[in-house]
Length: 114
Image (cartoon, rainbow, N blue to C red):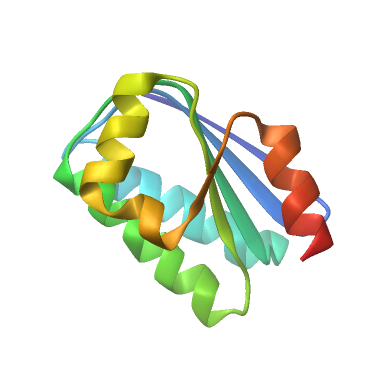
């Protein structure tokens, strides 16, 4: 899996490419948490546009980062363009916690306005 991190104002954009499974969840968590602390990020956007697979370990990692950002007073958004990924987001309950957007720009605009 590849991870691309970009900070836009106080929002960390995490683009995940490939599979977020039990092998990748912990290293991904560590990279995200280190970047949040070092760059003083307030909000978090997960870009799932190029995510091909996610298992329960990946879902758990996403929920854990949601709790962290929420405790810091920020918000987490998800970007999803694939129907199968959106179905997983809905079935896992992530959609009840976080808003799903069709693009990063949409998510950035809403987080900026909040």
